[in-house]
Image (cartoon, rainbow, N blue to C red; front, top):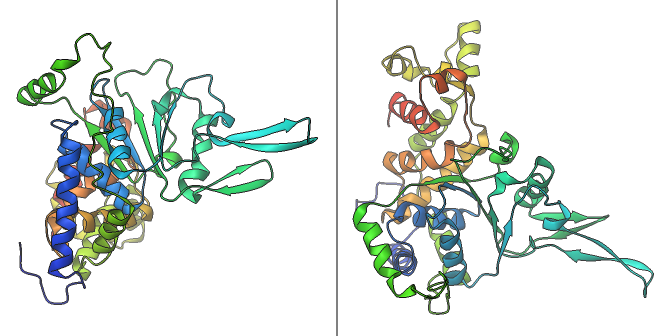
Length: 362
């Protein structure tokens, strides 16, 4: 463990050890069913501690749904799954008013969104009016049905999945809704050894119709409500130096080409102009690849997630490495890339990597 610098937060060594123990128990419990997806496992816990939502992107069969079910099992939270389809209606998610002839009045029938963990499976297969039904819930933690507004359960956690390899019959999420997700996790194929372990883990399921191993009754309840609150308290006491705060804001500001153009018109340098030479070192610069950058909501998200990454690493203060490790997850769905990026074969991760290389590290 790195020595704590002067002016660190109030997180004691005992609290840090206790938090690390909870994190390791969670990782062990998840690893019993989820093999070779350590980044996804840590990403789920990061969002749960931060109180944000997650967009999971990956090809079919990479344990996205299984991971969410495992998370619900080891937290003991109520879980519901919504399969998004083109014929889904907003009322199928939020609920609706039902006429009761015996009482001659309408009553509220709440939808599946009234739970702790919501799995919005293949969210990009439903049209915009259905996707937008989640906006109020994800941002305000409430749902309006008729003339009444109902608070959602606490905690409330949306995990949406989408398949990146199929585009026919899908509806891309609008930027306003993407910004509601704290993190975007990309799920890759496992390595050969990990896949071999997956096969061995499921080798006794022959003849079960593929249903073996889907009971979660034996999952260790490693992350109850008290432990989640303990992790949140520990993360809130992680120290963030003023230079690290400035570093976080500089990274997010460096995603905004409009700021650079404004600086050119006024003759003043934008806040990230100190990285100008480093940016030019990448050729013609990165700003031609970005149509729109991230908002201050991204700065807030990066701040909180960097704290949690420091907690996972066993530190009582945030290092630049913690900020960098969280930046991809926080920013990749908040950047709108230009046609030039697509033409040059660059995705959001590649552009963010260039931004991280361009911003001076404190």
